[in-house]
Picture 1 (cartoon, rainbow, N blue to C red):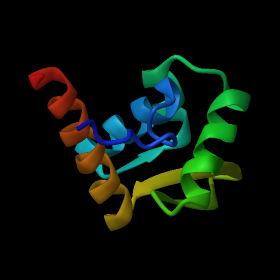
Picture 2 (cartoon, rainbow, N blue to C red):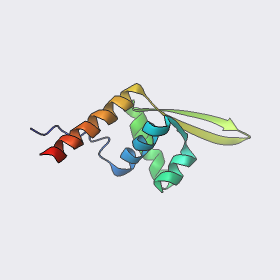
Picture 3 (tube, rainbow, N blue to C red):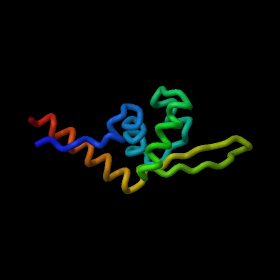
Length: 94
């Protein structure tokens, strides 16, 4: 009756990251950190988990001699997020 919720997206911070990226498609690590009010260390761990399952791509480069990390949602990530939202909506309709 109830569809299982994706355990990767069921984490509050990972869900927040995906929610941000679904609307902006791509964002710098510092922007995500600021918007989610998380620590750099915790966010880094959660971003890595999202990257490992293929929900986001992470690009690291230097900009004006400072490291810059950019996160971008993938097609797989969009599909997973939409599926997660649909599953939640099914829970609410019961």
